[in-house]
Length: 56
Image 1 (cartoon, rainbow, N blue to C red):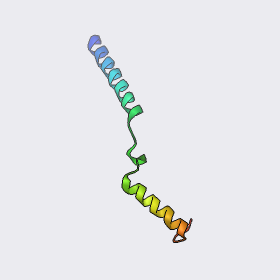
Image 2 (cartoon, rainbow, N blue to C red):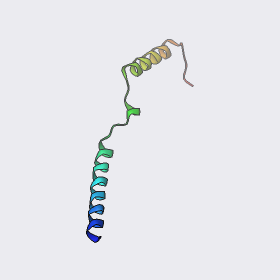
Image 3 (cartoon, rainbow, N blue to C red):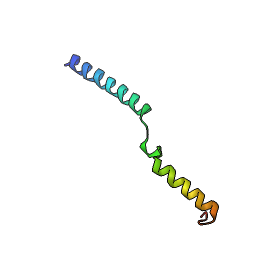
Image 4 (tube, one colour):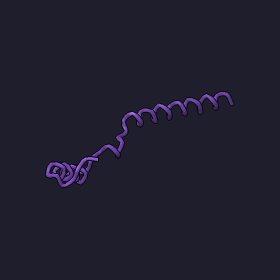
C-alpha cells in the first residue's frame, strides 16, 4: 500500500510539472489580433482622423 501511494504521488507530481510547463507556454487567444481585427482598427483610426468619429 505504501509503495502504491508513493507511485501515485510521484505520478501526480509529474502531471503537475507537465501542467505547469504547458501553462507557461500557452498563448492567450484573446490577445492575438486577426487580419479582420487589424483592418477594423485601421478603419477606426482613419475615421477618427477624418473627424467621422470622436473619442469618448
